Length: 245
Image (cartoon, rainbow, N blue to C red; front, side, top):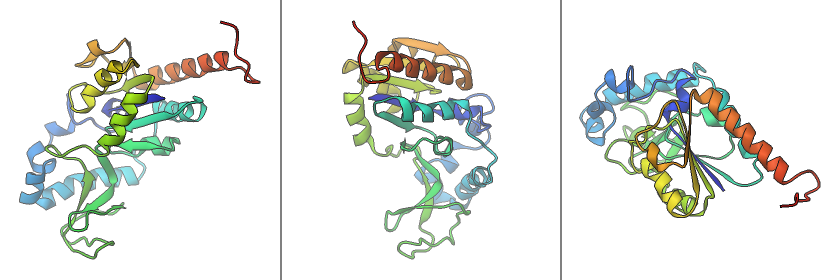
């Protein structure tokens, strides 16, 4: 199994601003106001306005998958082994590029979550305190289906199981500062997996990886995918006959 972890760097070239760094979203709005349960409880309309603005642009098609997203979709269909794709991003660019199975550990912007019945649902409209849950009918109970600071990422059990069984771990466009994701490479290597970093520049935990390839994701990821697919074809040629060792 190939375990792929993607972060904000893969979507930056599609025009989606990162949360951290120069020009990041956290430089324009206080994290405490829009990305914590306490901030939402204090002023839900402020938090809704922040995510509504992002969601509108995503739904309107302001952002398109780039060559890195498209390359990972090709890898999924041609690798000849499972590709476990986990993203820290809340956009849907992987799905729009053609990836069939994506685990969003930090939630999805185009979904809403009900605090009353705990259900989640597709949601492309604005959210407000007047929004009513279509599952249980409660009003004012909906929030963005996004993991905020102080909350646990989603589906960690599945992620941990995949880290135990993968043969290769690849991180793409991640900062290496956000846990638990920043610890995934070390966890995979402890089980004998190789670890590769594809990033614009070395991440905060670059020393954990066996190898790093640095540059724009839209250039490095397609090259790596094509190399991976080519190597597989040389090992398993048409007819299924293995070449001699």
